[in-house]
Image 1: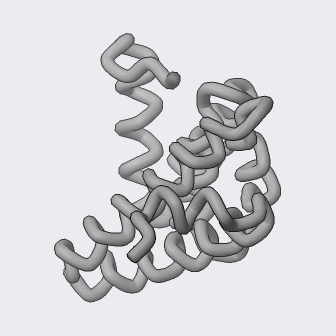
Image 2: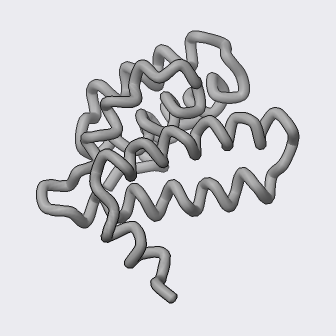
Length: 125
C-alpha cells in the first residue's frame, strides 16, 4: 500500500490544486456542521498537498493563486494562506479582502492570520 506522500507525488499539479479546492469546500461544510474532526482530517490532507507542491521544483504553491477567485470563501482563504510565502502581496491583499467581507467564519480566520503576520507570530515559509 502506497503512503499518502507517495500517492501525492504521483499526481499532477492540476489534480492537486483541484483536490485542494474540493477540500476547501468540504471544510466549509464541516465548519457549518460543527464537524471539527472532519475539518481537521481535511486540514491534514490539505497540508500534505501544500508540502508536496512546495517540494516540487520551483515551489509550485504559487498554483494556489488560481483559486483566489473561487466561489467558496474557505477555498479562497486556504489559497491565500498557502501562497503567503510565494506571493506575499497578493496573498495579503486577499486576506484583507476576506477579513473585510465579514463572511464568517473565514473573515475572522483571515483577520487573525493578518494579526499574527503583523505581530511576527506567524512567518510564512
